[in-house]
Amino acid sequence: MGYTSRIEKLRTEHRPYLDSWNGEQIYKRFASYRDSLSLRHAKPEDILRPDPAFSNLPGQVPNPSMDATSNVKEPLQTPISPGHDYLKHPPRCLPLCVDRSKLESLDDYKALNLPVLIRNIPQHEDWDCCKNSSWDLSSLSSSFPKAKLKCGEDDSGEVLRVSLKDFNRYVNSNLDDSPLYIFDSRILEQNSTIRSGYSPPSYFSSDLWSNLKESKRPPYKWFLIAPERSGTTIHTDPLETSAWNTVVTGKKRWVLFPPNVKKEIVKAKDLFLKSQDDEAANYFMSVLRKIRSLHPKIPCYEFTQNAGETLYVPSGWWHGVLNLEGGVGVTMNFCDEFNFDK
Figure 1 (cartoon, rainbow, N blue to C red):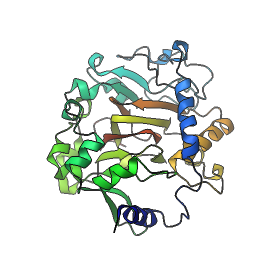
Figure 2: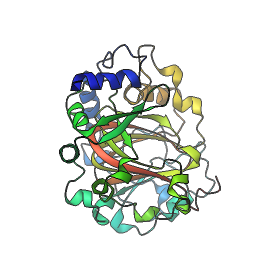
Figure 3: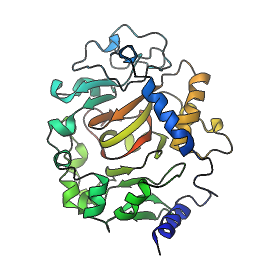
């Protein structure tokens, strides 16, 4: 079986209901959508400054990746406290952006259940994957061409796997509306080169699940390889866990809604056109603006995560991701003293 047949088999098994994987031809519109995001931050005055509500929190820095198109018309002027009602008094901008070198602890953010974007963790904490480019997709496919990583499941829950050699070719050539996306945990255990490329950030070293045997833990860490236009639709993480997600190469678009926003609003099943697949590209490029228009008072935070940045997603927060560029990253779910009682 050749490359084309292998990829087509994966497509068919992963989403058998699709007549065509590029029927909407999203690739033709994607570049202009991505460029429109960059244009929003082209001038210094477009940079969204930290909200006055967070003036008592440490380490804040301006972030040119922040999107100044939140639904919130007026900034909250008083510091946020535990038990804050995000629907009645939404902050103007989230998440905050801090630099790893300027912040020793995330406890203040964790206690408030606030997302935060952290710059330069891989560099500051000496991740090997940044020193030797070992996580570059071309390098990975050359070093481990036969390694097979999870890129989805079929309707019966069976795992679908693709070789790194095939996936490298796929990333650089596919025109799919919502491409296959590697989300693999096994490789982090079986491949010492990849495993040694990172370590959990020191901010998240307290993980109560580590007291369990590895075999008793639910899946909690994943190695990510993403083509542009791939992504994950809006969801909350399982078992009320929190998560951190680091982009090593590439660029991701995120949207966050606070935990108390209703599921039917964020999922917005009724806002997809009949011709649209329920995937991340359509959600970000079409559905999200409809949600903003229909629910102008609902806090909705959209921003771009660049290479070298790590996002902390607290327990219960709705989040979705669209990969603006192909890239590689790592993510982990965890439980600590701040979300244990949930």
